[in-house]
Image (tube, rainbow, N blue to C red):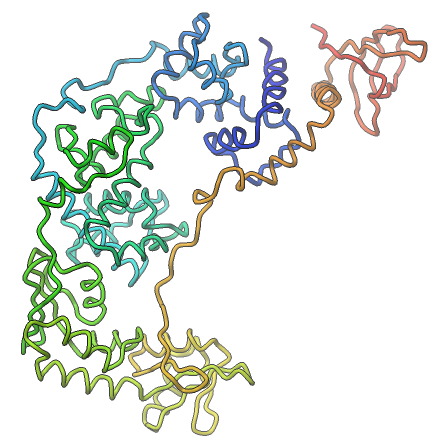
Length: 576
């Protein structure tokens, strides 16, 4: 099939497809929603471009890849693979591969497809190490929670390749969230795959889903993430029932993808770390229904996880000791007012004026701190800790930051003249441009920005509302919703609308496209023109121009320049 015929056949096929199918195809081929395609012929030409075809081959599952190889060799692709290949714009409606697809297949798989399956790994593993899998699930859930909490404090920087920077790996290791830099990469990738982390291209940020996840009990954290991991698996690793194929088949699941084995290893590690696979590829009892396409069953896992506690020992040395894994919602709040010193089944936390001050900055009060800690403690509220809370709370609100709704200025007030003078000349506050006005400082910068600038400069600031009541500010920047969170049809709606509009007269559009290409190549073409009396005449022209609804070309036989209305041209064919 000539390339131009292939483009027209694909364009006609694309025009007949529903928007949902086109949107999935465009997403698979990584088509930009802002593409400047004018009609289905532009789309067909782009989809048959070698680079686009290669992207389509990379994601092709093994059964479809084998069918495509057979079609390239001249054998018809059987159903259902024929329909799948056609939906991926790799074969025409009759199952014949397009020329650029044939070339791409011969280039990426000149010797066919090798069998890369591992018969020792899969659902049929003789013995599953349930205890090791359960321990991996528990420790990984705790590590991911630590990563999210650290990311709320400060986003994790990304390098140009999109991975963690070396300094960020060290930060996670030094904080005890992970043991090694490789583990940091693995668990950050896992958190991103299931939507707990997002990105703004320069950094990893906690998503709204991740923020909610932090408040869940450990078993519910695991359950939600297990289902999300299964659903996030590459389509080639998924079974027809909605689960996943045996682990041993993953390396060869996308045979046209040179990075397929490496991607398979990464996903296997993610599922192993979450207790959905053991190191031999076997599936623990609690993950079997999930692997078969069903829902998560946590009953078998629950008995193997250490029980959570809801009380701690508060001690006179300003530490707290949890006699077991602390319930996540309690752990998250306790860590907002104390620094965790060790993480194990018995974790320890340390209070200080700085940690209590940070809690008050985030919206706690002396009363709320005393109430929470008294209810959490098995030993009451030690006097040294109560003293630190009272002293820090008294100091903390000496600088008050409020937005003035009338002047739209931010007003900073304090009764301490020494603090007022210090803020007035502090060079670290230049970015908020504080100006002395009587007994207060004012700024044109928003109150939230001024508050965090003062906090970073270690001033005892508190944000207040119009009535002077303290208000909590959320500093953590959450990840914005990404295009991947949307239905592909929503993402590509403007492009699809333009393509549908451009396909109103496909024959005329195709004819104009052929003539435009002929003009660009200064090609000689035979043009069939419909005359007023209903007869047809063929002119052989060297195409020289196209515009205003007319084709211009030199008739070499008559040695004249002809101008033909496009509305009278029925067909065009390339000569030679």
